[in-house]
Image 1 (cartoon, helix red, strand yellow):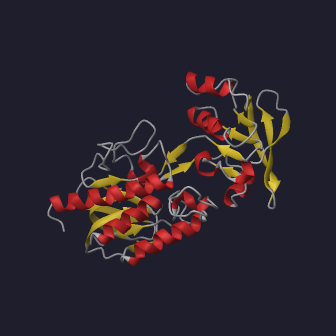
Image 2: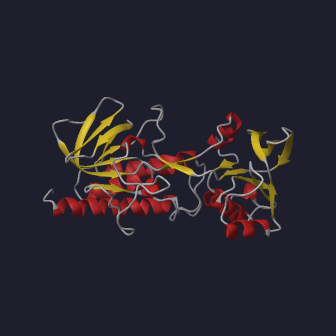
Length: 328
């Protein structure tokens, strides 16, 4: 529980790579940070540990030459933050008041806290199809993912057919990237023309490894617990006819939704809904004393290592801002 009579120096909202890195740096700077890590049953997309909790193996984070399970990595991040006496609340932040300092934070465990500075690290959630079969293979890490850059190099996809779901620039980027490993790469799109920019469309349509399946949606992900994804059942939206296509993986490229609902519009956002940073090299937001780090402010990279780097920057920015305001 938090002491409602104490104003914290800094509260960190979120517990992915950005949040825990911010906590480590803030704790080592003697800021005694308080972290709201979320809770798995709270009905919020702010999942403790972030999106890496759905990744069975992380191979592209420096320092782990043999890879590491995503959940184990986030447990190690958390343990390191605790080593420096970071205090942790396992609750979801439901709302904040940024109209005056100190800022006030409310959570779904009925706790309230105040802080001179806030670091928002709530991430962005991938948009999914919402199929039960999709969830089955996503949780198990058996072939459903929303990040080709993260998972595309895994052996299960090499030389095998995969499917990219979507029709925008992100889908075209994912499809092009996956041609380095998979063959063929199917792009499944619900319309008869792509939404992507012209140059991205041309790049995909001219690639002999990429085949576009038009006017189609995924009605079921096929496979089993042993082999993972083995195919997709597709439905043609015009004819209603269903057909199966053999693939070893499905990559969702339907965009991401930043987890900013609890802010209730109190911070400036970009046209895509991400928290807008006032300086591309810093983590300052539109409200003085509030800093944003990781995927909640990053619509481009969305990698664990870039999120961790932003967490470091956010803690240093907060530390210096507090010092400038005589709060040490």
